[in-house]
Image 1: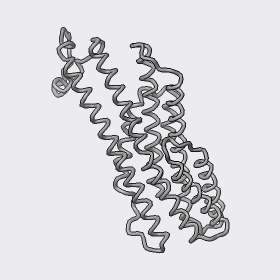
Image 2: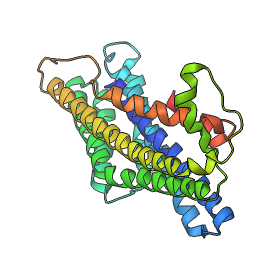
Image 3: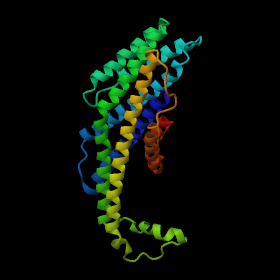
Image 4: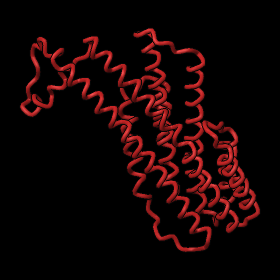
Length: 286
């Protein structure tokens, strides 16, 4: 449970990085091509960034609670778990709906309140049942909001692809990097490019189109894997809450798909590592 919740934190943090990049692209388009980026749109982007940050924090805190929950028999564990659950209550309270997800948010909040009460009263079985409901609520919240996050990623890939294509058309890109596949095996480097740059422009645009498709596809696979991981986490906790033995204890296999996608996003953002926003996202991902 802790690993899956941590992966959910990475997912939200990677999406926030994508949104930060989208904001930069909007600003570039405004300067280069006079495409309007009104204050209202800027505010909407910033608000969505804030909501992603809150969800990342919620997932991170739920991961911490999950690790502590298994130690309820310890002398200080009940107090620690109650404090973690109370913090999660605040996390949920601060969420704003990016879609019609108020019911799911309220379900998580009610379940966490029940966790706190049960732990304070040393009722471990009731606490386990409340954790069951909280886990299901977080899974349901993710599923309900998935389409919104999908549009966030596809908007980014579309704007980035259009901007890259425009720069190729303007003849300001170095298309000769496409020749590395032929030169690198023989440790050769390109000398004078001549008119190769213009000749390679159509191939460069084909590569942009293919990469845009890859970006969208890898994101959809990560989202589907995240849904499966959360559902499996919820099913396992439900099994325990019903006083039944858990068949599997290792992290769901689908977690690795999400982790791989998030790592690619963070790596792609590394050239802008001087940006406080990017550094913040990386810190949260750890």
